[in-house]
Length: 466
Image: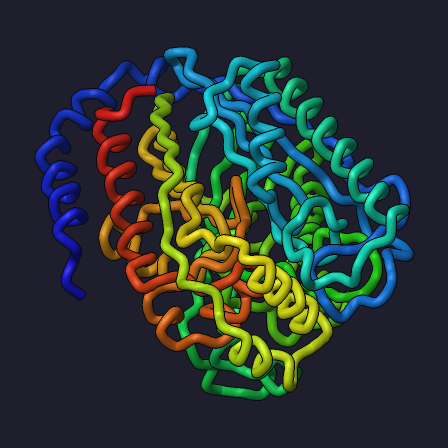
């Protein structure tokens, strides 16, 4: 694959400045290794039963729980006093307005910069409706249900602000280390059946990313106090009407059983076209959680790369182009064999077309974020990112990347150029799920890659200062 000129330029800049990076990281061992970290958690399980997020097939609110939902915070401070905040949550995703509200409060109350805050969602489909995301999927809410969602959103936001403050107040000396493991239950859902037949298929097709990404936080006695880990697979094992973090929730529970006093924080990787297969039953969700926890434990018990106490960060919002809205004839064809949510989307579209509403030709707020924690690079993208981006970015920037999606703003799916051309749910229909009027325009992949390479090249070499 020929690299775009923009990427080639930043790769040239990266290798040109590599010696400077080596000089910057050459410090005494005492300064080099010691960080400060604070960890905290808070329950975010709704205080009353309400509509659940993620599946159009549900026809009633939640009616029980398997385990609590959580918001967890990891505050990090390097040897120079630079501070970051990672928030992980058991929700479907942050909408832009929710993300802005939370970040504005964190900036105001704790004097954090926006680029130093990550708002991560596990993308569990067993949490509450918390914002406008996927609004076309659900049946129309009555005033009582709307009030429930509004009240729960306020509760959720307050819990995040509280947990962030508690994390900052508990900052203490730690070491950070990173490593990778492997878990193999993610299956490419575009290429394989969604039922138990996948269990008997010796030739599972399509790309999947089975890397388990791990950052360990250890105290001065070398005891782990926090573990941050990620995997590229939808949290869609369960569709029952009970609150849970799905397999990521079970994985975090297992790790905290194994290491008493540990706080485990899960993040979703580039797995928008991946499902845990087979799926649908509680024992399967528990099994996948245990498999993932064992993979993390293996990494923790083996030598890991100790990270220098240095933070560099970057955050930008870039513009991604959208196609024009479909015409009435195209909309009519959508609902011929469509589900109820297809019809609701078509009705909304026709209302807008009839009223002469203008449709934006782009989404100008797509978030791209990069952190350099010592020698470990973390790339953070918004939306539901397909697995192709994992392989492309590792080819360009090296295998030693940690890749997080579903962060800061989950506005819809982010297809690669290949998936966009092929169409299907991830390339086309998912845009309707999120209420958008058209599809992304070819060139989306290059725009995102260019910004990631720009940021990573500069933070790795200290050009973008904290």
